[in-house]
Amino acid sequence: MADELSIGGRRFNSRFILGSGKFSLEFMRRVIDNGGAEMVTLALRRANAGKENILDHIPKDITLLPNTSGARNAQEAVRIARLARDLGCGDFVKIEVINDSKYLLPDNQETIKAIEILSKEGFIVMPYMYPDLIAARRMADAGAAAIMPLGAPIGSNKGLLTRDFIKILVDEVDLPIIVDAGIGRPSQACEAMEMGVSAVMANTAIATSNDIAMMSKAFKLAIEAGRKAYLAGLGRVLEKEAEASSPLTGFLEDRS
Amino acid sequence: MKDHMVYASNMESIESNIMDKVLARTKEYDPSIYDESDVKKAIGTDRPAFEDYKALLSPAAESLLEEIAARAKKETRRYFGNSVSIFTPLYISNHCDNHCTYCGFSRNNDIVRGKLSRDEMEDEFKAISETGLEEILILTGESRTESGVEYIGDSVKTAKKYFSTIGVEVYPMNIDEYRYLNGCGADFVSVYQETYDPDMYAKYHPKGPKRVYPYRFNAQERAIIGGMRGVSFGSLLGLGDFRKDAFSTGIHAHLVQQKYPHAEISFSVPRMRPHNNDNGEIHNNVRERQLLQVLLAYRIFMPFASINISSRERSAFRDNIIGLAANKISAGVKVGVGGHNKEEKGDEQFVISDPRDVSEVHTMILQRGLQPVYTDYIRMM
Image 1 (cartoon, rainbow over the protein chains, first blue to last red):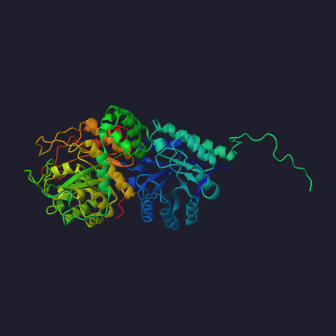
Image 2: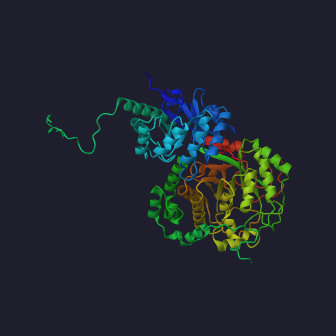
């Protein structure tokens, strides 16, 4: 059986979601091709204006994931999402509600409110969030189609700083968990996939590499490797102390 | 002369201790006590503290400019990737009630004064919009009689038809006036303190409404309270001790961001240039090397902030600053009144050094491997 990723009833072969915000547009197609990405995010506030339209640089068979960056509260996120749909970006939307210009950390509470409204309007809602189990459960209840926790602050390339909390989401929330921000290297993407997340999103790490096409490929391979490792089941990993060679329960006798 | 630290009766005073904090911190700052090891520590630290910022602005940092530049470039790439935003300023009036001794628009200067009628503004906006620009900064001199709040509001409403992003660089206002302009369609406000040194400030602003230091200082806060989404900070480097002024500017922006975390923060980094009122009195000690040092220090201290590079600087300097410290550049700049559609209606405020139009700047950005961005904003009102 094919190992497909299903989000909101749509199926994807690739588990690599490409963020487009920091690229030069001329490279977009090569990055998408090399990375095998089937879903690409799109900052609506950047789209549909100026001399170059980002939509012209994204192949038609790619699923667009417009985001609501620039929204400071639920109401603004809802407005941007509707605008995206009106512009023909489809039903997927990534909710980003950010109320802090310094760290760009997401506002989980406002995000939950936006999910409630947009999921009722038929959007396939993928919220960017701070990895908090309680908030993730509420997002699932509100109709989210996937949960996108941050691995580290946006653009920091610091990797899986929130590793343990993302693992909790993987274990407890019955939706695709997609690591959204902070992934700086293919090895970190691989590690996230080994942990059991469903997909990884990356942007800065690729956009700022010297050879973005090759880095895109590296992410593709790392994500595939991590996925296979997860499916295979990681073997015995030695912890700090070696496992005891003689059994701890060998003294038991079978008598009552 | 009037006490420059006392508000006039029509000026709104808000609860804020930011000015006192900035003045106290600046007073403590002695740029001469830092050495290369302090600078190296600042370059290597993950989250620069005030002390690191002080070291980055100190004379000791000049010999480490290359290393500082490498760190700043990393931050610029991290936060902005390849993106470089393009905008243009439009002066709609050069009437001015102030007497800034360093400025071409100063009240007693014998220059041609003018302001645009509503139709003329519309023609200007149309001409600018045809170049592909989506972001505009509307400027006036400081005259509440010639360019009142409603006049500015009218220009914003007209601009709204053509632009996704509208900023105003006009005189400081009260909260309800900012709220009015926000309702008209403006979301960003630039107010520059010129110099943060109160004594120097008093000297350069002998008369007129601008003389009141604290009213100008607190303009960003009033603008944010009035609903503006972003505010810009800056000193006109060269008026006072540029190291201390740059330090005050950064601390001011830092404290405003802490108090209003949602506000978007920007810096402009102008330095004294030849102008219409230039009598050579102000010793211009800010050379390109020092200007770059300030730009880099802003970027490292507040890596998330937007920094734009003025057309006062020569083109080769600007070309190298984008992607390194600045993420925003003006193009097709006219600093007289109007001038995009018809001839300018009033004289220029200063001399620009980079006359390139939008398509030339666009091409230059692409040639540098960067991506021109015309809009990065969705207006919510």
